Image 1 (tube, one colour):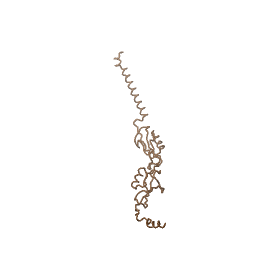
Image 2 (cartoon, rainbow, N blue to C red; image 1 turned 45 degrees about the vertical axis):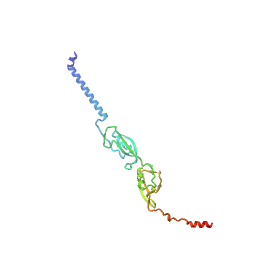
Image 3 (cartoon, rainbow, N blue to C red; image 1 turned 30 degrees about the horizontal axis):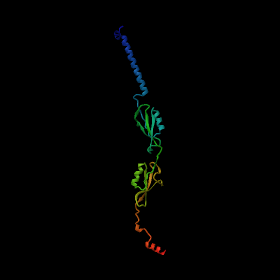
Image 4 (cartoon, rainbow, N blue to C red; image 1 turned 90 degrees about the horizontal axis):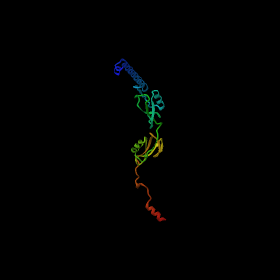
Length: 206
């Protein structure tokens, strides 16, 4: 049978039809396989992991085929319990696919220590911004007699006197002892001095 006659024969069309069916079946099976292993079109809502420990967060994520990855430990935030998650990416309720990594940041266990800046002999208005710049807070103010008004004479924590460079916990409240400005300079004429004539007399007696 010639090629021309074969291409027009029922046998040819039958074989073409069988081949098309096989291709369609293979494509269908392949799509089902991909859908099964990649969960095509299926989204998982990310749970809210904030204020939970990394261990508890991972337990939640394991149930959803997700994974927690700790990026960093951040400075202590009192709004969150120690060693709990403060930030996450993606955010809660965002739809993701299976096996997605959820990146988190963890709260420190407490405040770190910092060096007390030198605020002695500074005015109160100068000292407060210096404290806040390093993460400290202003506490109480006590006034004592002194020439300079509102100048820092001492700083304390819980009654303990501090000096520049002392280590204190971040967010501590620093109490101030300030001058009240009510003491004036003593006039030099009021100061009692030895009489020059008496000195001369004493010299003459010798």
